[in-house]
Length: 246
Image 1: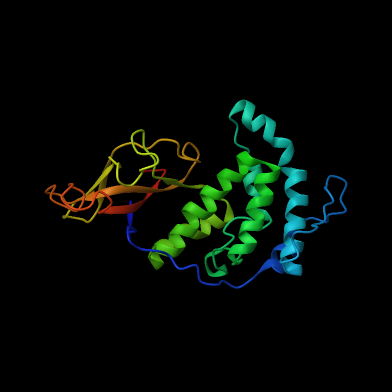
Image 2 (image 1 turned 90 degrees about the horizontal axis):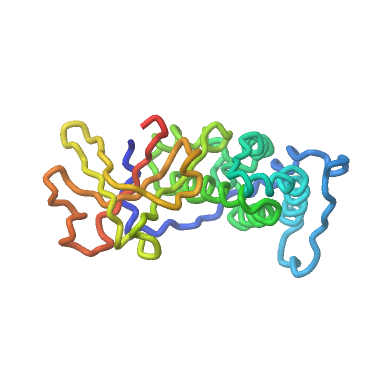
C-alpha cells in the first residue's frame, strides 16, 4: 500500500489542461459504418466549441453502437464486459483528464464531462464504472499523488490494463462518510507501511478493481494519532492506494 497523503482540508484546483479532442477523434471508427448511430448535436449546445460538439457527437455514435446493446445483460446478469473496457481504452476514453505524459488524453474538464454524459446515456452501468475509474481514482491520483505513484499507476489506468475504484462508504458511514468512518490505517514505524482494518460497502468497481483508493482514519502505532477522536471527527483521514494483490 502507498500512502497518497492526507486529503482532508485540501481542495484540488481544477487548473486548465490542454485540449486534445482532435487526437481522440482521429482514433474513432468511421461513423459511416453500418453499425454506427448517426447523431448531430442541436440547441441548447450553442455554448460548445466546434471541437466539443464533434467530440460529443462522435462519442455518442460509438457508445450507442458498441455499448448500448450490452446494457440489458449487464443489469440482468451482473455481468461486466471486459472487452468493452478495452474498447474504451483503444479509442482514448480512459484517462480523459490525465496528461499525455502518463498515458492519458489531456482533455479539459468540459470535454471529459461531455464524454461521461454520452457514455451514461448509452449505458449507465458502464458509465458509472468509467466515472469511478477515471474521476474518483485516476484523476484523484493525478491531483494528489506523488510523482512516483503517478508513474506507477496512471499508465495502467489509462491503457485499460488496470481498473480503478475509490473506497469510502461503509455500512455505518454513507452520507456522513468521513465523520462516521470506522476503517483505520495504522502505520508501522519500522518500515512506514500501513495496516488497514475495516470494511467498505457500495464500492463501484470493487469486485473487479485492480487498484482501489481507500479512505481511512489514520492512527499511529500507539493509537494516539489524529484518528482517535480527540480532534475533529473529520480530521485524520488519509487515502491509501491498495493493489488487488494486497
